[in-house]
Length: 116
Ligand SMILES: [Zn+2]
Image (cartoon, rainbow, N blue to C red; front, side, top):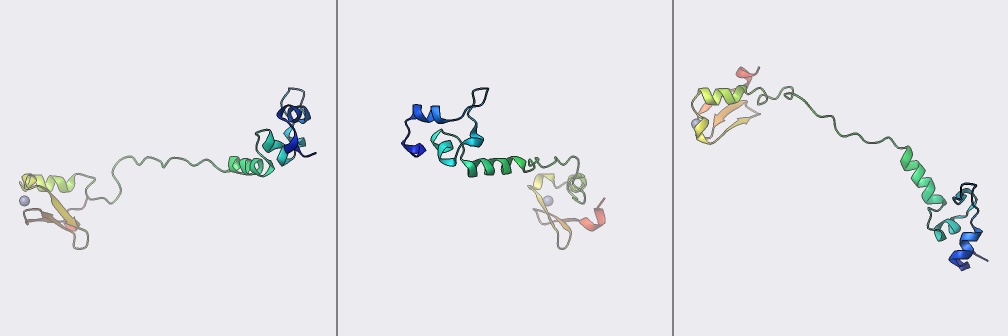
């Protein structure tokens, strides 16, 4: 008689139990485990494999200015401020030619000259 033909009560009786009352799943077939609402052999193996994987860590938070970022020091912002262009609505740095250009069109600096 296969486990799937057992009633729930018969299945419960058929499940070997350990001394603490929990079913001894090591003695159950996959079919019996599934019928009892437990992980079958393959699922249990997958579960153990996943448990053994190293836990991913959240990326370590970067503190302080990013190395090599000319904006991080506030250096370029100060240049825009000192040139009197803060009210122009923005500025850009072209990384190819290293020009700090105000949105009004003024060339404010070359970033390779002002890099910290
Ligand atoms: Zn401007």
